[in-house]
Image (tube, rainbow, N blue to C red; front, side):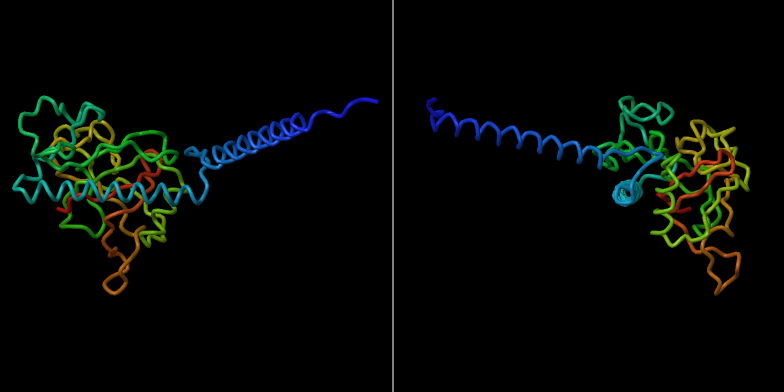
Length: 251
């Protein structure tokens, strides 16, 4: 007659089995979390879109506060600069500026952080800053200073416009002549003006104008008078892409 296995051996086996099960379950949970959080510009779930839009809006507001702070300190609108070591070179060299009080990303300037775009909302293009477009309902018809997140997904665009009560699918048709702004000469007729239109102090004197009729209308005045649109997502007829913009300075 065989002797039964010692009790402590059976207990050790049970503990090992439980540990293996626990490791397996932790692995499944980790995989599920990673899968849930995975997104790209073409496939992003609704909850992630809401989070990413909130991130973009908060950052745009941070940039606007930085601009206002510099302006309130006595700097002129043409002195504003967006240089940073990680920014495109057209914005300038921050290390070469001996007085950085006009720099958005300098500690003694606007003290804003330079951030990458939120994950999964566009093609990876960085935030851009332009002075070549008049935004419907804003200012006196001159070009505004805007922050632009280029080439965003349709899901991102739809969420932004819903939050801003833009129900008509705003369009940037390039109505104006998007040239004549110094470093931006030859830039395209779109709020996302590309590398030639990056803001380095000069505003476009013949600004690109979006299509006012595609923005939410103030019918109390006229069917063609839009409400002010300090933030929205527009489709650019020049390239067919969606671009998120936020007005940093009204002119």
